[in-house]
Image (tube, rainbow, N blue to C red; front, top):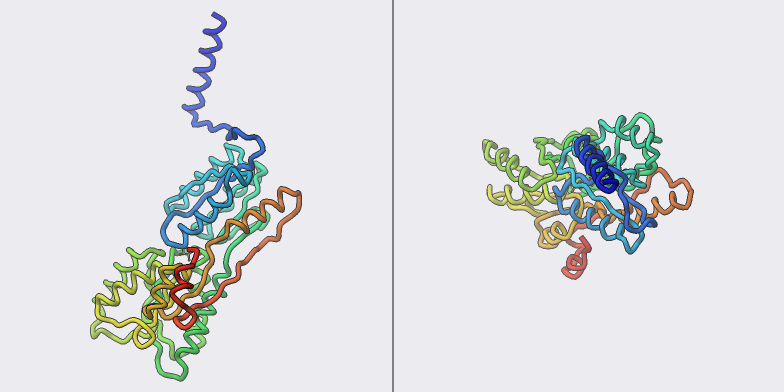
Length: 328
Ligand code: GYE
């Protein structure tokens, strides 16, 4: 009878937890593991896939971690839901790759009240109080864009018009905002640069192929295009596909495609002359994020911002061996 009573109580407790959607603390079989709740944007690009792999390779049980990985499938609301779940589960750290910069104040406040440090990775969150996150690890997107603009300046000396199509990444994301600002600033400083169009490629090949095809087919006289400034590699792949289909030769003597990320696929297109400039953006951020976490585990305060070193590639900088050995 007594046993029945306890069994009933257990079943009732379980049923009520299911009803209210209660999520209890993640119990790790090994109490010593540090629990990381990670909220990734999605899998929209080669860069993103490499970034997720880098995280998964570092935050393993062998290295002392239990990684709870959520893929938000490109939706900020999914990211917010995932963070709330991590708070209920009382994870030790939250690692967030914010899809866009705005809209984070309340949920990060909730994490702070639960005393869970948040580390921003890749993109930034534009919050009122900087203390809402412990550290940020990523790239300086404005600097990347400025490097690309300086290359355009060198590649097109003189005062002849430079006709540029600009294809943007996910609106409101730090990568889009920085790379866009750099191009717009440079265009304002060079009156002979003509921004023919600003299209939204959402960082994906499929969307870019669509918008670029629509744009090119509507051009009345198959007008001249000197540069296509693509805010990531997958945008460049979509643009290249559309341009070639519409009969535009791509390369230093035709349309100069500029791409950001410099993943293996883009470097291969750069080596074969189709992409004129590949601006590196390093997705292998796992080890740096771990350093930040280890600093906090040791009771120290990490630096607020960590930026990675990056470079530019043109065809002259590449060999087949270098492209093959590219890690991502
Ligand atoms: O360039 C792009 C991706 O935020 C740096 O997001 C990241 C960008 C990257 O999907 O490929």
